[in-house]
Amino acid sequence: MLILSFIFDSFWYWLVSGLVLIAAEVVISGVYLLWLGLGALTVGLFAAAWPDAPNWLQWLILAVAMLGWVVVGVRWQRRSRANQPDILNTGLSAYVGARAQVSESFVNGRGRIRLNDSYYSATATQNLEQGAAVVVLAVEGAEMRVQAVEQDK
Image (tube, rainbow, N blue to C red; front, side, top):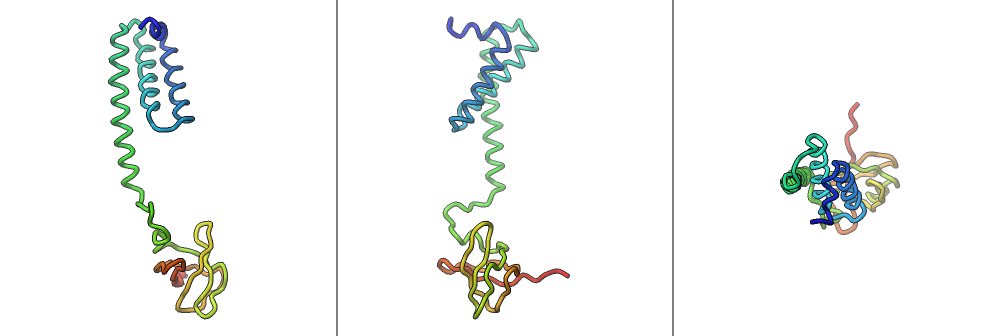
């Protein structure tokens, strides 16, 4: 404990320690050091407000703050995952329903479309001109079946 006793001398040590841990999290990644860093920042703010706080209380606040930040982080992560579609390992079928643009005119029902930043072979029941808006109806192998999007006038 003598090695870490200097950290109780000033709230600045807690704040700097927290920022160093958060910066290390950015470099290393893994969401482990983030909770320690946020806990240290919390203790630093507490120590700034109450500079004569005993050492045991600062350790207790560090433990409670880290656990609190873990709970906040887990809830935030669950909420953000629930709002994102699960497209992992779905391949091209994730594009069904997506809007695209014809990049090469369709002749005899065959052509190419641009979807996001990629180009795909596609089929349609009608000939489509370059630049036309289409929607992906299905994926058949490496080819997409598309249909023209009705333009609002």
